[in-house]
Length: 159
Image 1 (cartoon, rainbow, N blue to C red):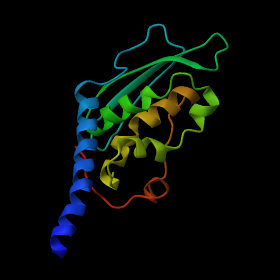
Image 2 (image 1 turned 45 degrees about the vertical axis):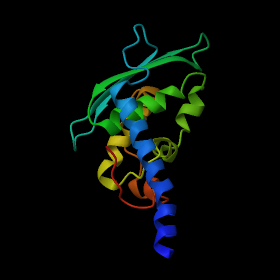
Image 3 (image 1 turned 30 degrees about the vertical axis):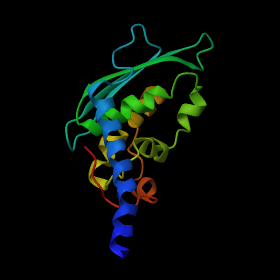
């Protein structure tokens, strides 16, 4: 009886994990905001040297040059890097440059909905790094791993 309740309580967690994995795969197979904006007000490209993922991002700003009116990304790489960029770009329209600068990399990770271990962190944050590079006009550094993973529950893997 006790093991039945234990397995019943683990089913919802497994089901949620599978839903989030499906969510990531959906964004990988059918990415939102894929493309290149021409003309663009901000543009940047970067890569993850540990795995070869590449990403570019273009943004259009409003007449004041302060608020995102459109965003697109393009690139190649693993499911995590491409899905993370797709998910992140969905939320950028309407934000001003200061909001983009203050975007927390932990929020980008949280939006994926699955645990991201140290080996996949740069994959998950490549879009974030490219966005910060576009805003600054220069290569942005990787967020501190310990800071980003401080609240993580472990080194699970995602697709």
